[in-house]
Image (cartoon, rainbow, N blue to C red):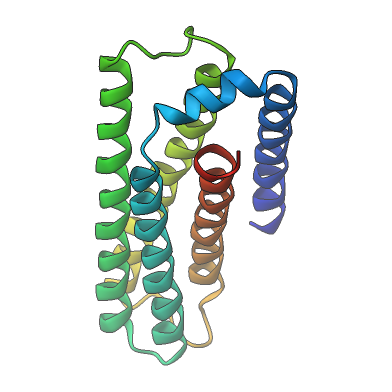
Length: 175
C-alpha cells in the first residue's frame, strides 16, 4: 500500500508542477480562472475531507482497542463526510459547466477539471475501500493483532485528504 500511495503522490506532484508552471507562464489567465471559483466550495470540501480523515483515524484507534462496533460507526461517519465532499464538488462542476466553462475553455480550466476530477476518482476509490473496511469491521475481521489492512486503508484515505489540501491551496487560495 505504501508503494501505491507513493506512486499516487508522484502523479499528483506532476500535476501540481504542471499547474504551477502553466500559471507562471500565464498568470493573468489563472487569476481570472480562480475568480470564477468559489473559495467557500473549496473550504467546505477541505473541511469535509479533514473531518472524514479524523473519523478514520479514530476508527483505527478503536480497532486497536478491539472495539469493532465503534470503528464501524466511525467509518460510516467518515463516509458521510466524504459524501458531503462529493455533493459539493458535483455542485461546483455543474455551476462551472452551466457558466460555459469546461476542459476546452482554456489552460486553467483544462488543468482544474483534469486535476480535480482525478482527485474525485481517488475519493470514490477511497470510499469503496472505507466501505469494504466497514463491512469487514462489522464482521469482526480486524483486531489489535490483525489491523494492518485496516491501517493501510486508513493511510490511503489520509493520502486522498492530503492531496485535496494541497489542491485546495494550489487552485483556490494561492495567487
